[in-house]
Image 1: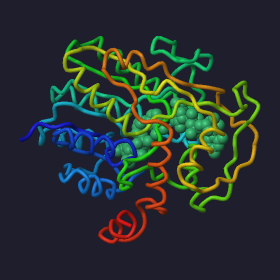
Image 2: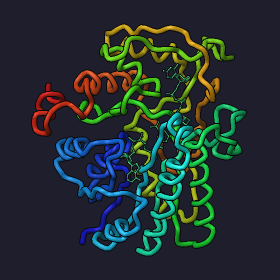
Image 3: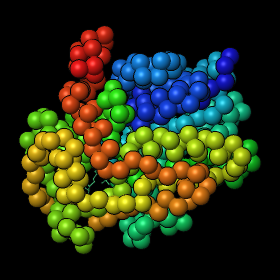
Length: 353
Ligand code: NAD
Ligand code: UFG
């Protein structure tokens, strides 16, 4: 058995980019995913770019027998844990599903890791765990708050579960990575974000308006106390984000216990700035209108990335123009995401054009 990194949720948006980066860094990778929000096509494309194939096992992190099988048949050294549900609105409608999947799923995973004596874990958390009144730029030491929805609460619960675990047993080496707003795609245009149905997030929505799939972007509020009145966020290129995971994996080797790092650029952009940057990168115009504020939104949120810089030696390298150019390349080459035609044709028709 070769030693390898287990990537849960590795067929998804961030997981597929991380799988690629891990393969390119020379790791062997085992991906587990139940494909509830993704397609195996993403991994076919990862293999195409990397020239190497990750091992894929379809299954659910809530299934302890499945996890036991994964750990007993592979020499897993570390786990990068992306598997989870992430739609804020769905979480309000189906809280039990979100707690079961995100919290219970992580609990099952940690139990299986412990049984297999695998103690290195990198977890996908979110800036949503910070309190509403957190002062920007947000530092890791800022208090966590009271998330406004079950999705956010599930992330906070998992963070607390992991903190207890690290305190209970000194063998654990855990990285909690709090993502700000991941956007963009691999520069090949072969892999990217493929949201189900109408996107909730800003950039996929803008891209789908630009490609003609959606009519008009609703800007949720122009009366925030920000320079142009629209919401400000810290958008981070998915390539930078996954590099942060590789750095974290290396650092927890020599840094036991629980570590928390923000992954953000330290710069905020407004919705209007994002639209303008996208129009510039794509040469398309994006129709928009002002709509009422969206419940639960805050005015501004951006990271202080100094801790990740000092401790991981990591800083975001890519700016807004790369985020937009790569998001547009992915969208324009794959207007229907991964779900176009049959497998072989898919690569030829959509991605190689
Ligand atoms: P995604 O939906 O594209 O990827 C998640 C993957 O996990 C999917 O492939 C899905 O099929 C799989 N999955 C879900 N539940 C599973 C289960 N029970 N067993 C096995 N596989 C399962 O989402 P993403 O954007 O790549 O996000 C990855 C992680 O990062 C998630 O945990 C998410 O909450 C977190 N995160 C994402 C963002 C963002 O804006 N994209 C921001 C902060 C945190
Ligand atoms: N926005 C619009 N119109 C849209 C979509 C978004 O104007 O159609 C605005 C929002 O109001 C906000 C900004 O664009 O000002 C960014 O919105 P996103 O939905 O893309 O991102 P959020 O910062 O609201 O949410 C993201 C993740 C959540 C996570 C949160 C905090 O999607 O899962 O960051 O980390 F909880």
